[in-house]
Length: 170
Image (cartoon, rainbow, N blue to C red; front, side):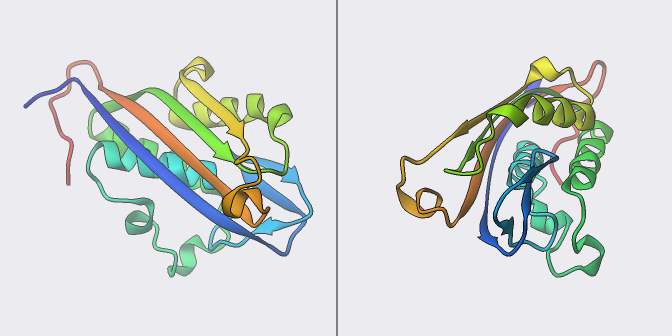
C-alpha cells in the first residue's frame, strides 16, 4: 500500500538529578536540578526522535543511539534529531507537522517555547509554523507532579516527498 502519509508517536522521561540546568527542545534552561541521562537528557527531542522513527517503523532512539555506547555520552540531542531527520529525508519522506507536549511542574517553559520551536524546525528542515510545542503540569500528581522528573510526548505526520516511492520500513 502506497500511502502518502505516515504518523508516529513518541514518549520520553528523565528523572531529576544533580545539576543547574535542563535542556528541553534544544534550549538550556536554568533549573535547580539537571536530568539524569546518558546524553543531555532532552526529553522533548528524544520523544520527537521516537515519533519520527516510529512513523517509518525504524525502531526507537535506543536502537539507533544505544545508551551504553560511549559515542553518545553527553551528546547534544539536536545532533541526534538532525541524524534522524537525515534518515527520514533519505528514505523519501518529509515532516508535515509536529505536535509535542512537555509535562513538568518546574521549570516553567512558556518563555522558552518560541526558541524550542525555532530550533526543532531548523533541525527538521521545516517552517516553525509546522512545529507545535506545548507545556503542561500534571496538577501535582505522579512523578512529574512530585517534581521527580520531566516527561514529553510527540506526534508527527510525515508526507512522502515529491516523486519518491514508498521506502518506509527497515
